[in-house]
Picture 1 (tube, rainbow, N blue to C red):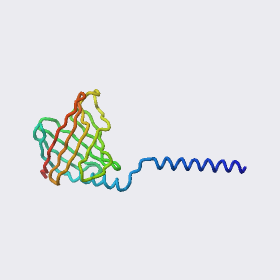
Picture 2: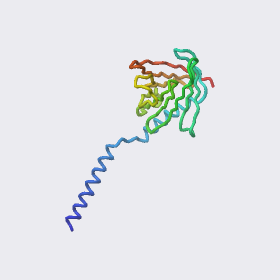
Picture 3: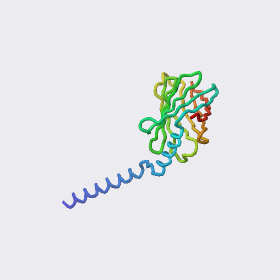
Picture 4: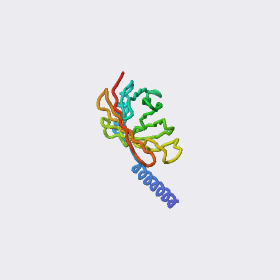
Length: 176
């Protein structure tokens, strides 16, 4: 009986030890990292309103609206020669995510790295793309949002089409 009790205690000790190892190796998001990503999302929320801008194709306008009880920022982007596109920005732990509903008919989903500096540029990289008709079809692969002050910001979109990458810079000024 004593041997069985010792074996049970040994098994329990091994299980607790292995559990502690697993917990210590799991990724942890500190409250500080969450605060930085929340501050970056608050910075994005400051875009709520109407914006006018330009890119290489001409005039553009953007409207930002808080949706889903303030948990998502919706961007409506309209170029002079293209149909409207929507982008949703959301907070996810120590990251920011976007889903871009492109006028090309696909939906790139992008994510920032862990937010280390909420005041700096926000750099999104593609995680996956839904709605592609073929792997070579053109789609967005990156976005850098840089807010220089309360009334000015830029977006630099990266686009991949048939293996060739290009960028487009949008410069915005607050309208209202």
